[in-house]
Length: 165
Image (cartoon, rainbow, N blue to C red):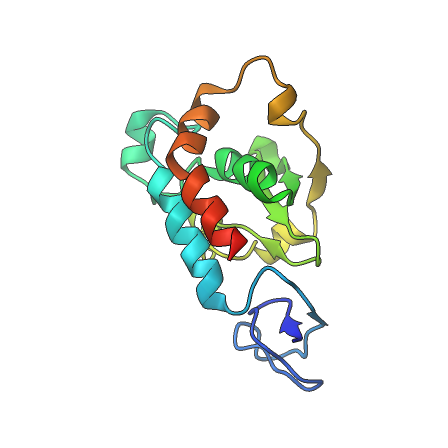
């Protein structure tokens, strides 16, 4: 099955993506997703672990923002650890932001809604400036960031089941 690189729906040669109605987009084959609903299911699993104890921000800042605020690091690292997806990074204007790229080339950013995105895909300005970021594998770390450890405990088992199916 061929999938659109933007909306993750099955496509033909002349597919016009509903997320970008003005362009015919390159399409991919990807073993990870059959539909946008699968990405939304992954997002709902990831949301369960987000809290003031996993955010990069202070508790006061987090209380006044969307749930994904400050959660990009723990989310991207978790998807890298569980599924092996590459981590992409943008340090624009001193604000670090992380998201993932699947082996088929599709980029996902489950925390993009903190910047006005849809919570599934990266904003276009992020995609154009993202660089691959390599971290030491978690299994090789002597200690784990406490925020990341809390987050992994909350979402890893359910995320593994979802990505296995």
